[in-house]
Length: 222
Image 1 (cartoon, rainbow, N blue to C red):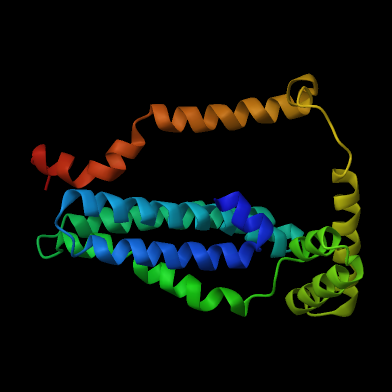
Image 2 (cartoon, rainbow, N blue to C red):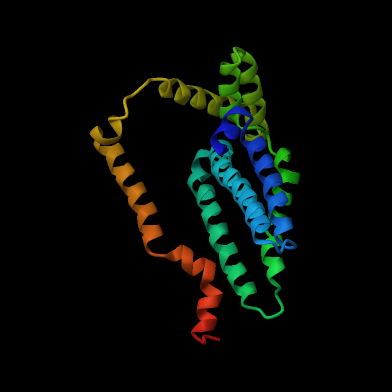
């Protein structure tokens, strides 16, 4: 769902849609008591979160200046961890009702939905859309306007637009799947990326994050 939305409709549009779905899934969780109904809206909220977490880093990387791209990309993970810590602390408080835990994620989702269109569109997406529709000049114009708004000068917009177009031209070259393993530099990245994902899951950190407060309470940790 997320790749299709981000590719066909745009990064901003995907985040907007995902945020609305998240809100629609989170708020009912605070009031529903029937388990099947609760699980259904929980699934809906998960779909919305999945769309946002797919489109957001893509959008950030495509609108950020090259020198800050990595830093801004890492901020997403940092905010997720920070939010998890805050949620764990709140869940330990006796006055914090469980309904709040399920309803509160709707607040940042609503902020994203209300504010995302104050950002210009992704320049890369504008170029890709123009090519796909057979209107490359229109795509270039939209991309340039977005870059002009983001960078603040015509010269900077022209320079980055040329870099993006050169990068896209290089990406049009088809390469076989075997490149993932036959090219040493790419193989190393694939192995590292997979190991990071697997090792993160094998540590059991998801269980700790989900049931941390209950674990500490059972262990009589104040």
